[in-house]
Image (cartoon, rainbow, N blue to C red):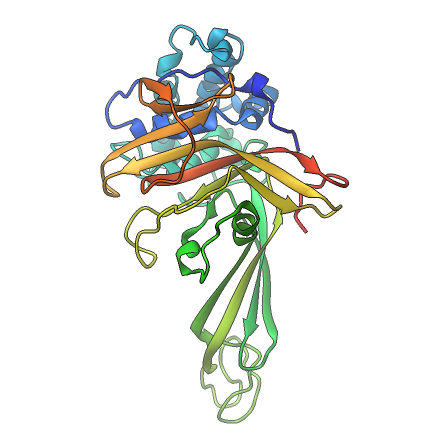
Length: 351
């Protein structure tokens, strides 16, 4: 993994809101503060130009990476950069994913990431996919900058067996479970552990290993092969264990009602630390923060971002002012970037 490099981070500048586009402005301000994203776009420019969205991203990144924007003075037209990218994104979605409703007004900043990663890919690699809400390609050079892998183990409380073991991928770390923790993370070590190791319980699980309560036979495909009775409900524990981390870690806090209520960011640290397989710690620093006020269908988004001069700025559409990273009732997304491995040999996978 490539460490944080401030030479690939722009100076602070605003983005024009051309009509309910604050969600994309804030998301984009967070994204361009991640040097791994800039490096990935520049290294894969020819490949990304295979789509209109990819070409728009390449043009914007090339403009600020090769201009005075990196020194804090934006190049001509760079303030409309997010507008041009969003225009290409919505046009691509209308053509390649006509069933997806996105871009007609205020949208979710987290959903914007999924669609952007999808539409940055050349059409021939993704046009067979019809799901508009999932990761389209784990092999994408840009998606892999955000892609983490986790293992889900399901343990049955009744029989004590490990009854399921699956591996999955995601680009967002959903931290909705934090409100269910008995003790809220109050330091970097506890927060990092809560991100990489999650547990949940369900009381209506039908265990495939528990014998039938009627005749004692082992269920097959959720039913007893003898009396055809469904597998009995029991309690199961799901353990989610992070097994691979990317350069960019996006931590999501649910601001909206649902998932048991609205969950707020009470605390997040300046650094994350994950154990590496070869020993030592993979260290990440906070580089961006997206905030939102209002309801799911409306309101306003803004961002806080670390810029090339080492300072944090409040980036509210065209407004730019000094700020700092801090948990607030409006915190929606927090972005961390890999900075290096402390200790033994570096590895991309946590232990």
